Length: 188
Image 1 (cartoon, rainbow, N blue to C red):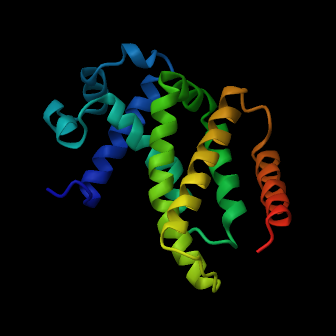
Image 2 (cartoon, rainbow, N blue to C red; image 1 turned 30 degrees about the vertical axis):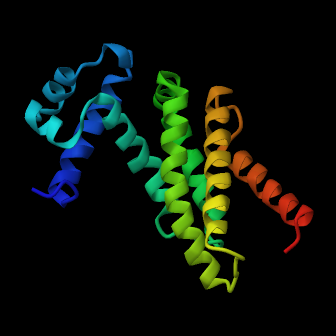
């Protein structure tokens, strides 16, 4: 079976939903693979076919729920809508994301940054071509992607650690203002 087939993704979603549900009542440190497999009705072997451990399942869940919808089809025209959706998803699942970030902020930030960097480099190249933006070297996309990836993950984690007091709309507007100010400070 292909690990990215529709059936495999359905199985991963089932285990991820189970982990999320278990984390409502049980600290992550006390949740075992057995707890996840029993509650989801998935065999232990199936779990290990898809994930090395519960941390990898947590990483996949964060990627699938937050990063993939943010990056997939990203354009300059929908950028703020994507930010708003990311903040909304987190706010709607506030307890889960605050708990996930507390598990290991370094790992979560590294995970978000790594995937964001990879995907943003691809996205920046596509968006640059669509908008006739030519960078001086091939490394420019990587550097810009790293900057944005680390910046985005830092903003998101900081917001969650502060208790998600600002609304998704306020956070999106803050980013809009930051981008606008950056464009004025560093004109093209």
